[in-house]
Amino acid sequence: MATTRIQVGIIGSGPAGLLLAQLLDKAGISSVILERRDRAYVEGRIRAGVLEQGTVDLLNEAGVGERCAREGMVHKGCYISIQDERFEINFEELTGGKHVVVYGQTEVTKDLINARLACGGDLRFDCENVAIHDIESDKPRLTYLSAGEPHEVVCDFIAGCDGFHGVSRQAMPASLLRVYERVYPFGWLGILAEAPPVMDELIYARHPRGFALYSMRSPKVVRHYIQCLPDTDPEDWPDERVWDELRLRLPKGDQDKLVTGRVFEKSVTPMRSFVAEPMRFGRMFLAGDAAHIVPPTGAKGLNLAASDVHYLRNALVSYYKTNAMDGLDGYSTQALARIWKAQRFSWWMTSMLHNFGPQDDFDSRVRGAELAYVLSSRAGQTSLAENYVGLPF
Ligand code: FAS
Ligand code: PHB
Image (cartoon, rainbow, N blue to C red; front, side):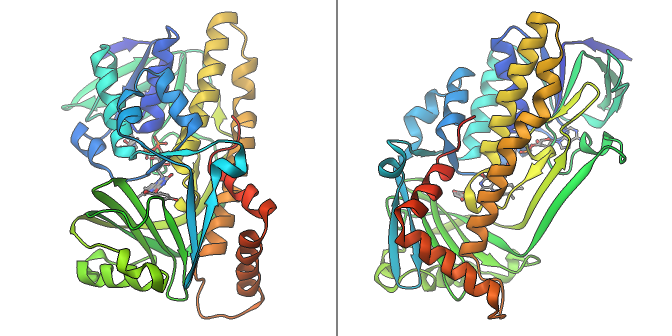
Protein backbone atom coordinates (compact mmCIF):
# COMPACT_ATOMS: atom_id res chain seq x y z
CA MET A 1 0.00 0.00 0.00
CA ALA A 2 1.35 3.46 -0.98
CA THR A 3 1.72 5.63 2.15
CA THR A 4 1.79 9.44 2.30
CA ARG A 5 2.95 11.17 5.48
CA ILE A 6 1.59 14.71 5.78
CA GLN A 7 0.63 17.22 8.47
CA VAL A 8 -3.07 17.69 7.54
CA GLY A 9 -5.23 15.23 5.61
CA ILE A 10 -8.21 17.05 4.01
CA ILE A 11 -11.30 15.18 2.79
CA GLY A 12 -13.14 17.02 0.01
CA SER A 13 -12.13 19.56 -2.65
CA GLY A 14 -15.05 21.94 -2.35
CA PRO A 15 -14.45 25.55 -1.27
CA ALA A 16 -13.71 24.54 2.34
CA GLY A 17 -11.08 21.92 1.56
CA LEU A 18 -9.42 23.88 -1.23
CA LEU A 19 -9.30 27.16 0.72
CA LEU A 20 -7.94 25.43 3.82
CA ALA A 21 -5.20 23.74 1.80
CA GLN A 22 -4.11 27.02 0.21
CA LEU A 23 -4.08 28.92 3.50
CA LEU A 24 -2.12 26.12 5.20
CA ASP A 25 0.34 26.15 2.31
CA LYS A 26 0.87 29.89 2.83
CA ALA A 27 1.64 29.08 6.49
CA GLY A 28 4.12 26.36 5.56
CA ILE A 29 1.86 23.52 6.69
CA SER A 30 1.66 20.52 4.36
CA SER A 31 -1.66 18.96 3.37
CA VAL A 32 -3.21 16.56 0.91
CA ILE A 33 -6.78 16.79 -0.41
CA LEU A 34 -8.65 13.56 -1.13
CA GLU A 35 -11.64 14.17 -3.44
CA ARG A 36 -14.15 11.47 -4.32
CA ARG A 37 -15.23 12.85 -7.67
CA ASP A 38 -13.28 13.99 -10.73
CA ARG A 39 -12.18 17.54 -11.47
CA ALA A 40 -14.88 18.13 -14.09
CA TYR A 41 -17.62 17.26 -11.58
CA VAL A 42 -16.19 19.50 -8.88
CA GLU A 43 -15.72 22.43 -11.25
CA GLY A 44 -19.14 21.90 -12.83
CA ARG A 45 -21.31 22.26 -9.72
CA ILE A 46 -23.53 25.35 -9.76
CA ARG A 47 -23.96 26.72 -6.26
CA ALA A 48 -23.46 29.97 -4.39
CA GLY A 49 -23.17 33.40 -5.87
CA VAL A 50 -22.53 35.99 -3.14
CA LEU A 51 -19.22 36.47 -1.29
CA GLU A 52 -18.88 38.41 1.96
CA GLN A 53 -15.87 40.71 2.15
CA GLY A 54 -14.34 38.36 4.74
CA THR A 55 -14.44 35.55 2.20
CA VAL A 56 -12.90 37.76 -0.47
CA ASP A 57 -10.15 38.71 1.99
CA LEU A 58 -9.39 35.02 2.59
CA LEU A 59 -9.23 34.37 -1.16
CA ASN A 60 -6.70 37.20 -1.40
CA GLU A 61 -4.72 35.74 1.53
CA ALA A 62 -4.74 32.40 -0.28
CA GLY A 63 -3.36 34.10 -3.38
CA VAL A 64 -6.44 33.43 -5.52
CA GLY A 65 -8.31 36.74 -5.39
CA GLU A 66 -7.11 38.25 -8.68
CA ARG A 67 -9.87 37.03 -11.07
CA CYS A 68 -12.54 37.71 -8.44
CA ALA A 69 -11.24 41.29 -8.18
CA ARG A 70 -11.37 41.60 -11.97
CA GLU A 71 -14.65 39.83 -12.74
CA GLY A 72 -16.58 39.95 -9.43
CA MET A 73 -19.39 42.50 -9.22
CA VAL A 74 -19.48 44.72 -6.12
CA HIS A 75 -23.04 45.04 -4.85
CA LYS A 76 -23.69 47.92 -2.49
CA GLY A 77 -27.16 46.68 -1.64
CA CYS A 78 -30.09 44.55 -2.73
CA TYR A 79 -33.80 44.95 -3.34
CA ILE A 80 -36.72 43.36 -1.54
CA SER A 81 -40.12 43.38 -3.25
CA ILE A 82 -43.52 42.64 -1.81
CA GLN A 83 -46.02 42.06 -4.62
CA ASP A 84 -45.99 45.43 -6.45
CA GLU A 85 -43.59 47.41 -4.28
CA ARG A 86 -39.78 47.29 -4.38
CA PHE A 87 -37.52 48.56 -1.61
CA GLU A 88 -33.77 49.09 -1.68
CA ILE A 89 -31.62 47.90 1.22
CA ASN A 90 -28.48 50.03 0.96
CA PHE A 91 -25.77 47.93 2.63
CA GLU A 92 -23.06 50.57 2.30
CA GLU A 93 -25.21 53.33 3.78
CA LEU A 94 -26.46 51.12 6.62
CA THR A 95 -23.14 49.44 7.55
CA GLY A 96 -20.68 52.28 7.10
CA GLY A 97 -19.41 51.23 3.68
CA LYS A 98 -19.61 47.43 3.61
CA HIS A 99 -20.77 45.53 0.53
CA VAL A 100 -20.74 42.03 -1.01
CA VAL A 101 -19.19 40.67 -4.19
CA VAL A 102 -21.21 38.63 -6.68
CA TYR A 103 -18.87 35.94 -8.03
CA GLY A 104 -20.02 32.35 -8.57
CA GLN A 105 -18.79 29.55 -6.32
CA THR A 106 -18.00 27.66 -9.48
CA GLU A 107 -15.38 30.31 -10.31
CA VAL A 108 -14.03 30.29 -6.74
CA THR A 109 -13.55 26.53 -6.99
CA LYS A 110 -11.80 26.80 -10.37
CA ASP A 111 -9.48 29.53 -9.05
CA LEU A 112 -8.59 27.45 -5.98
CA ILE A 113 -7.97 24.26 -7.97
CA ASN A 114 -5.77 26.09 -10.48
CA ALA A 115 -3.77 27.69 -7.66
CA ARG A 116 -3.40 24.37 -5.83
CA LEU A 117 -2.08 22.63 -8.93
CA ALA A 118 0.11 25.59 -9.95
CA CYS A 119 1.95 25.50 -6.61
CA GLY A 120 2.40 21.73 -6.83
CA GLY A 121 -0.10 21.11 -4.04
CA ASP A 122 -1.23 17.51 -3.50
CA LEU A 123 -4.84 17.32 -4.81
CA ARG A 124 -6.10 13.84 -5.57
CA PHE A 125 -9.35 13.28 -7.50
CA ASP A 126 -11.28 10.02 -7.93
CA CYS A 127 -10.45 8.78 -4.41
CA GLU A 128 -12.86 5.96 -3.71
CA ASN A 129 -13.98 4.65 -0.32
CA VAL A 130 -12.15 7.23 1.77
CA ALA A 131 -12.12 5.88 5.31
CA ILE A 132 -10.98 7.47 8.56
CA HIS A 133 -8.93 5.55 11.15
CA ASP A 134 -7.31 6.13 14.57
CA ILE A 135 -9.00 9.53 14.97
CA GLU A 136 -8.18 9.66 18.70
CA SER A 137 -4.51 8.74 18.24
CA ASP A 138 -1.79 11.30 17.51
CA LYS A 139 -1.37 9.77 14.05
CA PRO A 140 -4.83 9.49 12.50
CA ARG A 141 -5.00 7.82 9.09
CA LEU A 142 -7.02 8.03 5.89
CA THR A 143 -7.27 5.11 3.51
CA TYR A 144 -8.78 5.07 0.02
CA LEU A 145 -8.68 3.35 -3.34
CA SER A 146 -7.39 4.97 -6.49
CA ALA A 147 -7.86 3.01 -9.71
CA GLY A 148 -8.47 0.01 -7.47
CA GLU A 149 -5.13 0.37 -5.67
CA PRO A 150 -5.09 0.92 -1.86
CA HIS A 151 -3.51 4.10 -0.48
CA GLU A 152 -2.90 5.41 3.01
CA VAL A 153 -2.36 8.93 4.37
CA VAL A 154 -0.79 9.21 7.84
CA CYS A 155 -1.23 12.70 9.26
CA ASP A 156 -1.30 14.81 12.43
CA PHE A 157 -4.85 16.08 11.84
CA ILE A 158 -7.84 15.39 9.58
CA ALA A 159 -10.05 18.17 8.18
CA GLY A 160 -13.52 16.86 7.25
CA CYS A 161 -14.44 19.19 4.38
CA ASP A 162 -16.56 16.60 2.58
CA GLY A 163 -19.92 18.35 2.61
CA PHE A 164 -23.32 17.28 3.87
CA HIS A 165 -23.14 13.78 2.40
CA GLY A 166 -19.53 13.08 3.31
CA VAL A 167 -17.96 10.48 5.61
CA SER A 168 -16.33 12.68 8.26
CA ARG A 169 -19.48 13.58 10.22
CA GLN A 170 -20.46 9.89 10.05
CA ALA A 171 -17.16 9.07 11.78
CA MET A 172 -18.23 11.00 14.89
CA PRO A 173 -19.48 8.72 17.70
CA ALA A 174 -23.29 8.88 17.91
CA SER A 175 -22.90 9.35 21.66
CA LEU A 176 -20.95 12.58 21.05
CA LEU A 177 -22.81 14.06 18.06
CA ARG A 178 -25.76 16.45 18.56
CA VAL A 179 -27.76 17.36 15.43
CA TYR A 180 -30.11 20.35 15.11
CA GLU A 181 -32.29 20.43 12.00
CA ARG A 182 -35.26 22.12 10.40
CA VAL A 183 -36.54 20.99 7.00
CA TYR A 184 -38.63 23.53 5.07
CA PRO A 185 -41.80 22.66 3.10
CA PHE A 186 -40.34 24.03 -0.12
CA GLY A 187 -37.23 24.10 -2.34
CA TRP A 188 -35.77 26.42 -4.99
CA LEU A 189 -35.89 25.74 -8.70
CA GLY A 190 -32.82 27.53 -10.07
CA ILE A 191 -31.82 28.41 -13.63
CA LEU A 192 -28.71 29.78 -15.24
CA ALA A 193 -29.50 31.63 -18.48
CA GLU A 194 -27.88 33.86 -21.06
CA ALA A 195 -29.76 37.05 -20.30
CA PRO A 196 -29.10 40.45 -18.69
CA PRO A 197 -30.02 40.91 -15.00
CA VAL A 198 -33.42 42.40 -14.13
CA MET A 199 -31.83 45.13 -12.00
CA ASP A 200 -28.29 46.22 -11.10
CA GLU A 201 -28.55 44.31 -7.81
CA LEU A 202 -30.35 41.19 -6.54
CA ILE A 203 -34.12 41.23 -6.00
CA TYR A 204 -35.56 39.04 -3.22
CA ALA A 205 -39.29 38.86 -4.05
CA ARG A 206 -41.99 37.89 -1.57
CA HIS A 207 -45.17 37.05 -3.50
CA PRO A 208 -48.43 35.15 -2.84
CA ARG A 209 -47.39 32.76 -5.66
CA GLY A 210 -44.13 32.09 -3.81
CA PHE A 211 -40.66 33.51 -3.30
CA ALA A 212 -38.38 34.36 -6.21
CA LEU A 213 -34.78 35.57 -6.37
CA TYR A 214 -33.34 37.45 -9.32
CA SER A 215 -29.55 37.08 -9.17
CA MET A 216 -26.73 37.06 -11.65
CA ARG A 217 -23.26 35.74 -12.51
CA SER A 218 -22.19 38.49 -14.96
CA PRO A 219 -23.82 41.31 -16.98
CA LYS A 220 -24.82 38.61 -19.49
CA VAL A 221 -25.67 35.59 -17.31
CA VAL A 222 -28.46 35.45 -14.75
CA ARG A 223 -29.11 33.05 -11.88
CA HIS A 224 -32.80 33.11 -10.98
CA TYR A 225 -34.74 30.99 -8.49
CA ILE A 226 -38.40 30.34 -7.77
CA GLN A 227 -39.79 28.72 -4.66
CA CYS A 228 -41.21 25.31 -5.53
CA LEU A 229 -42.31 22.09 -3.84
CA PRO A 230 -39.31 20.25 -2.37
CA ASP A 231 -39.79 17.21 -4.60
CA THR A 232 -40.23 19.25 -7.78
CA ASP A 233 -38.88 17.60 -10.93
CA PRO A 234 -37.11 20.22 -13.08
CA GLU A 235 -38.46 18.34 -16.12
CA ASP A 236 -41.95 19.55 -15.15
CA TRP A 237 -40.75 23.14 -15.61
CA PRO A 238 -40.04 23.87 -19.29
CA ASP A 239 -38.13 27.11 -19.79
CA GLU A 240 -41.19 29.11 -20.86
CA ARG A 241 -43.05 28.13 -17.68
CA VAL A 242 -40.08 29.22 -15.57
CA TRP A 243 -39.80 32.58 -17.29
CA ASP A 244 -43.57 33.17 -16.96
CA GLU A 245 -43.46 32.43 -13.24
CA LEU A 246 -40.40 34.61 -12.73
CA ARG A 247 -42.23 37.46 -14.46
CA LEU A 248 -45.40 37.00 -12.37
CA ARG A 249 -43.50 37.18 -9.07
CA LEU A 250 -41.94 40.55 -9.93
CA PRO A 251 -43.67 43.86 -9.08
CA LYS A 252 -45.87 44.87 -12.03
CA GLY A 253 -43.64 47.89 -12.66
CA ASP A 254 -40.59 45.61 -13.09
CA GLN A 255 -42.10 42.76 -15.09
CA ASP A 256 -41.04 44.27 -18.41
CA LYS A 257 -37.42 44.35 -17.16
CA LEU A 258 -37.20 40.55 -17.17
CA VAL A 259 -35.39 39.51 -20.34
CA THR A 260 -35.51 35.83 -21.26
CA GLY A 261 -32.64 33.88 -22.81
CA ARG A 262 -31.18 30.43 -23.36
CA VAL A 263 -31.42 28.39 -20.15
CA PHE A 264 -28.31 26.23 -19.75
CA GLU A 265 -28.75 24.90 -16.25
CA LYS A 266 -31.86 24.01 -14.28
CA SER A 267 -31.94 22.27 -10.88
CA VAL A 268 -33.90 22.01 -7.64
CA THR A 269 -32.29 22.62 -4.24
CA PRO A 270 -34.02 21.34 -1.11
CA MET A 271 -34.12 23.66 1.92
CA ARG A 272 -32.90 22.79 5.36
CA SER A 273 -31.23 24.34 8.39
CA PHE A 274 -28.76 21.91 9.92
CA VAL A 275 -26.00 22.05 12.52
CA ALA A 276 -23.91 19.15 13.86
CA GLU A 277 -22.13 19.72 17.16
CA PRO A 278 -19.34 19.49 18.14
CA MET A 279 -17.21 20.09 15.01
CA ARG A 280 -14.34 18.06 16.40
CA PHE A 281 -13.62 14.50 17.50
CA GLY A 282 -10.10 13.56 18.52
CA ARG A 283 -7.82 14.90 15.80
CA MET A 284 -10.60 15.31 13.21
CA PHE A 285 -12.16 18.74 12.63
CA LEU A 286 -15.26 19.44 10.50
CA ALA A 287 -15.54 22.55 8.33
CA GLY A 288 -18.22 23.80 5.93
CA ASP A 289 -21.25 21.81 4.84
CA ALA A 290 -19.87 18.73 6.63
CA ALA A 291 -21.01 20.45 9.83
CA HIS A 292 -23.84 22.77 8.78
CA ILE A 293 -26.35 23.64 6.07
CA VAL A 294 -28.32 26.87 5.72
CA PRO A 295 -31.21 27.73 3.40
CA PRO A 296 -29.52 29.87 0.70
CA THR A 297 -31.88 32.83 1.29
CA GLY A 298 -29.21 34.58 3.33
CA ALA A 299 -26.32 33.68 0.96
CA LYS A 300 -24.39 32.21 3.90
CA GLY A 301 -23.43 28.63 2.98
CA LEU A 302 -20.20 29.28 1.15
CA ASN A 303 -19.31 32.18 3.45
CA LEU A 304 -19.69 30.03 6.58
CA ALA A 305 -17.37 27.45 5.03
CA ALA A 306 -14.84 30.28 4.65
CA SER A 307 -15.10 31.45 8.27
CA ASP A 308 -14.78 27.86 9.55
CA VAL A 309 -11.60 27.56 7.48
CA HIS A 310 -10.31 30.86 8.90
CA TYR A 311 -10.70 29.58 12.47
CA LEU A 312 -9.28 26.11 11.69
CA ARG A 313 -6.27 27.56 9.86
CA ASN A 314 -5.51 29.84 12.83
CA ALA A 315 -5.80 26.92 15.27
CA LEU A 316 -3.50 24.70 13.19
CA VAL A 317 -0.93 27.48 12.74
CA SER A 318 -0.99 28.04 16.50
CA TYR A 319 -0.43 24.32 17.14
CA TYR A 320 2.54 24.04 14.79
CA LYS A 321 4.09 27.19 16.27
CA THR A 322 3.58 26.38 19.96
CA ASN A 323 2.80 22.64 20.05
CA ALA A 324 -0.15 23.62 22.24
CA MET A 325 -3.63 22.25 21.49
CA ASP A 326 -5.64 25.10 23.03
CA GLY A 327 -6.44 26.75 19.67
CA LEU A 328 -7.68 23.43 18.28
CA ASP A 329 -9.52 22.69 21.52
CA GLY A 330 -11.39 25.98 21.08
CA TYR A 331 -12.13 25.63 17.34
CA SER A 332 -15.59 24.09 17.57
CA THR A 333 -16.92 26.59 20.11
CA GLN A 334 -15.47 29.53 18.17
CA ALA A 335 -16.83 28.39 14.79
CA LEU A 336 -20.26 27.47 16.18
CA ALA A 337 -20.73 30.94 17.67
CA ARG A 338 -20.63 32.51 14.19
CA ILE A 339 -22.46 29.55 12.57
CA TRP A 340 -25.50 29.93 14.82
CA LYS A 341 -25.75 33.66 14.10
CA ALA A 342 -25.73 32.89 10.38
CA GLN A 343 -28.26 30.09 10.94
CA ARG A 344 -30.56 32.55 12.66
CA PHE A 345 -30.22 35.09 9.85
CA SER A 346 -30.79 32.47 7.14
CA TRP A 347 -33.85 31.11 8.96
CA TRP A 348 -35.15 34.68 9.50
CA MET A 349 -34.75 35.68 5.83
CA THR A 350 -36.32 32.39 4.72
CA SER A 351 -39.26 32.78 7.12
CA MET A 352 -39.96 36.39 6.10
CA LEU A 353 -39.81 35.88 2.35
CA HIS A 354 -41.32 32.48 1.57
CA ASN A 355 -44.91 31.32 1.28
CA PHE A 356 -45.44 28.55 3.83
CA GLY A 357 -48.69 27.32 2.33
CA PRO A 358 -52.42 28.01 2.44
CA GLN A 359 -52.67 28.36 6.21
CA ASP A 360 -53.47 31.94 7.08
CA ASP A 361 -52.59 31.45 10.69
CA PHE A 362 -50.89 33.50 13.34
CA ASP A 363 -47.38 32.55 12.16
CA SER A 364 -47.99 33.61 8.57
CA ARG A 365 -49.32 36.99 9.76
CA VAL A 366 -46.29 37.44 12.01
CA ARG A 367 -43.93 36.63 9.17
CA GLY A 368 -45.58 39.25 6.98
CA ALA A 369 -45.46 41.79 9.80
CA GLU A 370 -41.74 41.02 10.37
CA LEU A 371 -40.92 41.98 6.79
CA ALA A 372 -43.19 45.05 6.88
CA TYR A 373 -41.39 46.18 10.06
CA VAL A 374 -37.93 45.65 8.53
CA LEU A 375 -38.81 47.63 5.43
CA SER A 376 -40.24 50.49 7.50
CA SER A 377 -37.42 50.67 10.06
CA ARG A 378 -33.83 51.82 9.74
CA ALA A 379 -32.96 49.61 12.69
CA GLY A 380 -34.57 46.63 10.97
CA GLN A 381 -32.79 47.32 7.70
CA THR A 382 -29.49 47.83 9.50
CA SER A 383 -29.87 44.43 11.14
CA LEU A 384 -30.54 42.82 7.77
CA ALA A 385 -27.65 44.65 6.11
CA GLU A 386 -25.01 43.89 8.74
CA ASN A 387 -25.89 40.20 8.69
CA TYR A 388 -26.02 40.03 4.90
CA VAL A 389 -22.57 41.64 4.38
CA GLY A 390 -21.22 39.25 7.01
CA LEU A 391 -20.72 39.48 10.76
CA PRO A 392 -17.10 39.81 11.94
CA PHE A 393 -14.98 36.65 12.06
P1 FAS B 1 -19.07 21.02 -0.72
O1 FAS B 1 -20.27 20.14 -0.64
O2 FAS B 1 -19.06 22.15 -1.69
O3 FAS B 1 -17.77 20.15 -1.07
C1 FAS B 1 -17.58 18.88 -0.48
C2 FAS B 1 -16.65 18.09 -1.38
O4 FAS B 1 -16.36 16.85 -0.73
C3 FAS B 1 -17.28 17.75 -2.72
O5 FAS B 1 -16.38 18.03 -3.76
C4 FAS B 1 -17.56 16.25 -2.62
O6 FAS B 1 -17.46 15.59 -3.86
C5 FAS B 1 -16.47 15.80 -1.68
N1 FAS B 1 -16.80 14.57 -0.95
C6 FAS B 1 -17.99 14.22 -0.43
N2 FAS B 1 -17.91 13.01 0.16
C7 FAS B 1 -16.62 12.59 0.01
C8 FAS B 1 -15.91 11.43 0.39
N3 FAS B 1 -16.52 10.44 1.04
N4 FAS B 1 -14.59 11.33 0.07
C9 FAS B 1 -13.97 12.35 -0.60
N5 FAS B 1 -14.59 13.47 -1.00
C10 FAS B 1 -15.91 13.59 -0.70
N6 FAS B 1 -24.67 28.57 -0.62
C11 FAS B 1 -24.85 29.89 -0.79
O7 FAS B 1 -24.26 30.69 -0.05
N7 FAS B 1 -25.70 30.37 -1.77
C12 FAS B 1 -26.35 29.50 -2.64
O8 FAS B 1 -27.09 29.94 -3.51
C13 FAS B 1 -26.18 28.12 -2.50
N8 FAS B 1 -26.77 27.24 -3.37
C14 FAS B 1 -26.57 25.90 -3.19
C15 FAS B 1 -27.16 24.96 -4.07
C16 FAS B 1 -26.97 23.58 -3.89
C17 FAS B 1 -27.62 22.58 -4.84
C18 FAS B 1 -26.20 23.12 -2.80
C19 FAS B 1 -26.03 21.64 -2.55
C20 FAS B 1 -25.59 24.04 -1.94
C21 FAS B 1 -25.77 25.43 -2.14
N9 FAS B 1 -25.15 26.37 -1.31
C22 FAS B 1 -25.32 27.69 -1.46
C23 FAS B 1 -24.30 25.96 -0.26
C24 FAS B 1 -22.95 25.62 -0.85
O9 FAS B 1 -22.46 26.72 -1.56
C25 FAS B 1 -22.07 25.18 0.27
O10 FAS B 1 -22.19 26.02 1.41
C26 FAS B 1 -20.61 25.07 -0.12
O11 FAS B 1 -20.52 24.25 -1.25
C27 FAS B 1 -19.86 24.48 1.08
O12 FAS B 1 -18.61 24.10 0.66
P2 FAS B 1 -17.92 22.78 1.27
O13 FAS B 1 -18.12 22.77 2.74
O14 FAS B 1 -16.57 22.76 0.69
O15 FAS B 1 -18.81 21.54 0.75
C1 PHB C 1 -26.97 33.10 -6.22
O1 PHB C 1 -26.64 34.01 -6.99
O2 PHB C 1 -26.83 31.88 -6.50
C2 PHB C 1 -27.57 33.45 -4.89
C3 PHB C 1 -27.51 34.76 -4.45
C4 PHB C 1 -28.06 35.09 -3.21
C5 PHB C 1 -28.67 34.10 -2.46
C6 PHB C 1 -28.72 32.78 -2.90
C7 PHB C 1 -28.17 32.45 -4.13
O3 PHB C 1 -29.23 34.43 -1.26
